[in-house]
Length: 267
Ligand code: CA
Image (cartoon, rainbow, N blue to C red; front, side, top):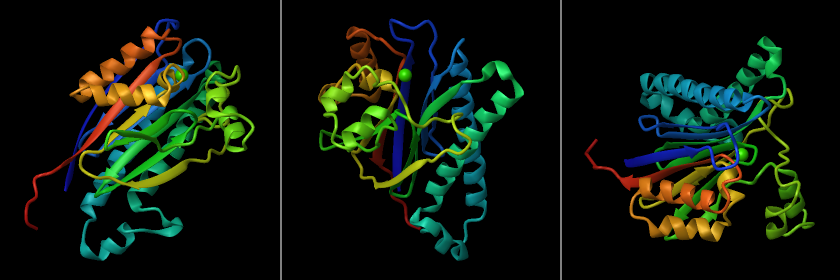
């Protein structure tokens, strides 16, 4: 049984008047979420909060049902289902789809919110498999053996150019269109949620962050900061300080989740 320790920090940065980022941590469900809202008149704040709250609520309800229904006859359905995703991955994927509908619903109820949207990246751990789902350019990384690895692919115009071989990663990082995202919650009527499953190991640290971090700092500098600090809290603070010391042009949010060996107990 693996245990987790998680902490997060969000900062308005030095150039914006509102913080439209939002994050959520649910240690019991082993769920962490980061959302980066967009839209005029601080409506991005509304979208990112709806998304985080909706995902937390949905996973909470889903996880309760799962615990109550836990019995041997249930185990086949839990170890993998249609589409090859494990049950908790499908739960997270559904939670993100529902969050998208909630954002659209809020816009329908209040026309003034038209144009708001949000990215999201979420991670839900069960057993030794982390389900990671995302839409937009908020990212998930893994730090293992002091090595930082990007796990998600940005849904951005520039990243599509990188994947197609038209831009280098460094060109993409400073490109004038780097902020153009191609998927968001609250955007088109249907949203495609990218899901991946990764095997976790004790000692792993996972970083979920908004683009306010990754547009200010290349990966190698993020890795250097993360491996230099002793505690998760210090790492969060150091990353935000560094993003701000480089200009703080955007809201910046970081969530860190460390995987630890739990107390093993028989049965
Ligand atoms: Ca942002």
